[in-house]
Image (tube, rainbow, N blue to C red; front, side, top):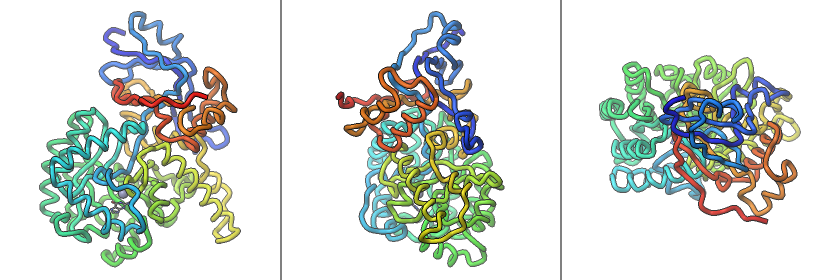
Length: 473
Ligand code: GUN
Ligand code: ZN
């Protein structure tokens, strides 16, 4: 094809469907091409398939070879806080105290343009070095931080969704924004950034504890006027937070009702956490087409509780799920680390379901769905996240027409004995079968970290290359 601008040859692993729909034969949801070719033009995939087939159509195209690596779509982080990049790993508090003690003082600094700009560089360096190529992010209530976030994303050409954070109570005065100011600044920012380059806008009420009914009404008004925009918030993360939300919205039956009442729950709505959502609330999320960002690092680091992945993936009422690092409530940027903790959260949920210590109804199907197989894990990190965020028409796998964001994984890098562990699965040149590829990636997610991300490509261009070599032994 005339005009194709680059081609990548290597071993590809991506998803074409939801593995939870294929329990017992999850490979059917995945795609593995041992010797494949990905052809990219202007940042978009124009061809993909086996090297033998696809290369015939591009006889003169220079090919970049990436041997001894697995190539996956870029990771999607569906819940992250830009202004918390400097404060992960803060000691000693659960959510509400943690916000007051560590987070709000730091976020106040982001009305300073230089501070926000410098931090944005660190933020995107960290994101890309962990293999994350798309995120749904919170900024602060300062338009300055929101502008600097979008401007840096545009310089990197990264696909992001973000927006000015609405909070008009429960924070220091200088971090509060009135509903009117929030409305007018959101209007201005939507005009300036939404669908400009790869930037997308999310109307962002921080959480019910920090948002008055008037603020929520302004969000509803913005959504009515800009239906194409996303909505980003937090829900049912921590018991004290939930009690406080009930106190502020006494007319609402539960936390989800707050968003229903203000016309927000629906497609393109994503709420972080949802740890304590009832079965009925999960059903309403499913029906509405709304998404939950599962943030296991944060579930554990802030001691919030365990998200019920198996319940949320009930085939009768499946909720759209994306993964979130929740940096800095979560203590790492790396989606590989997020998957590790997600696996552990699922296993702990099954102890609860087992009934031996803390009896709950035993549900074997739910227990099975709690287990994060490598297929389910890397689906969530790629196509599943894209589906949850309503981005799957643009990205998430290697289908033609999608944006060419991908990562190059070295399954042997990381901990000292990684190569020895992985050599139980493959020796020498790499995986020959889809199951070997999946098992290597399971090793990456359970033993590995961002050292396994060798390269990150954004819109067909290499944006990150690891400089420290894996130990050879
Ligand atoms: N709820 C409201 N704000 C935040 C935040 O910054 N982090 C987390 N984890 N939860 C929140
Ligand atoms: Zn959060």
